[in-house]
Length: 300
Image 1: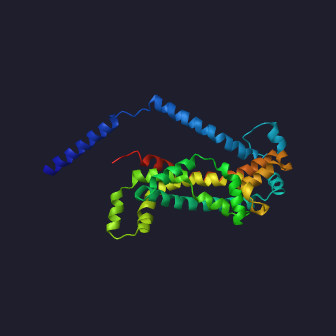
Image 2: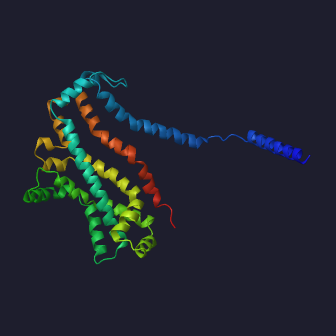
Image 3: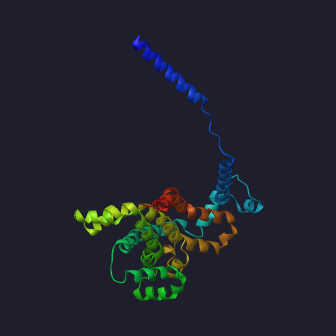
């Protein structure tokens, strides 16, 4: 009887739970939230349309492009590619831009993080004055010192090399400022003191504690550093002279001024090839932007 009663009670409880689940009202989507989703989807479509136009026009002939826009790809991509390659070697420029952009991104991310860590957790003479000077340098356009920079590179004998494009770009005041503000809100000084008490060296603390915590911010700045280096046009145009060393933006500038500019399909194809690394960088690193922005929103 006791076992039967227990079974009956369990059956009744399960029936009651099932009835409660069945009678639970369905959650309805509110109208404001639905409007927000509609607006976001519309904005995403609007932002995607220029990229779609670029990809579609890269496969169409010049006459088809001038006749109007369509979402149907054409069949002239091979002709456009041959016309483009007859004037410039776009893959050589692609390789040169990729080498420069990757090196600039790696060096800027590491040394900017090291500088930001020093400004945040070390006390030394002239610290505040140096930091203020760095902030002032953020407001000075780089084009103002272009002539002086050219003369300096000429005296050092590093013109027509990648050194002027890589080494100076590794020192970015804005990246240092951003990483310093980020690490002040995410890394507590007591963690560094605990590591020092355990006998860890300063560089060991930086590489094992500071770098992992700063990775979201470093990844965020790496996106903008990579894009800025990839799209850099003025500096490579000034310091590079050999056509085989030209970067992709410089080659695209020559392409625009050549006879191939009359073939809009070749121009669209060259632009499409040039934006592929930027799209890949956003695809793999964009999630870190949200992490780095939201990291400072929670205070202890």
